[in-house]
Image (cartoon, rainbow, N blue to C red):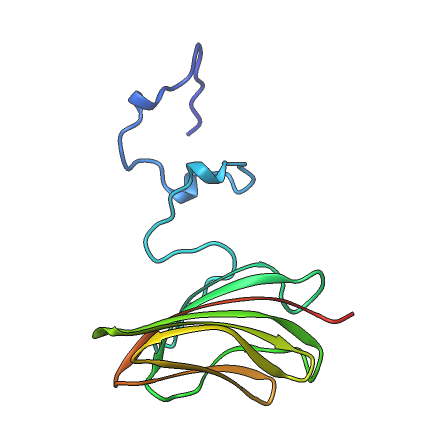
Length: 169
């Protein structure tokens, strides 16, 4: 049932908390990002959840697979000494960029680390910065799959990765 409002309209004090839901907002509404608070467990861009517990969240701005490129973030768990794929390049020698990794053992913050590496033409990683405490972070390739491995201790490593780059023309 449509309601016609005369005068100055409805003010915030006349709306009960919790009564406006997602379905009430027009899909073409242009709401400033600073006025949006995301619900727990949600994200912006390409968010994914793997029911196996591997990939728990991701975010992408632009597109690292095309030109002019972009950046993406992935937040996931890596098991001790297991090479875990986080990005698949478009093909041999067709992509370059920078990879930033942070990892911490879920049960021991004394096992944490940071790695910043460049990935270039010959499918080769060059470490620019590496700083870890009782943890080794390694990047490797398996075919076109970029993988991260965390070693030192046992269990699961909470891992955050940022990838910036672009495919060649």
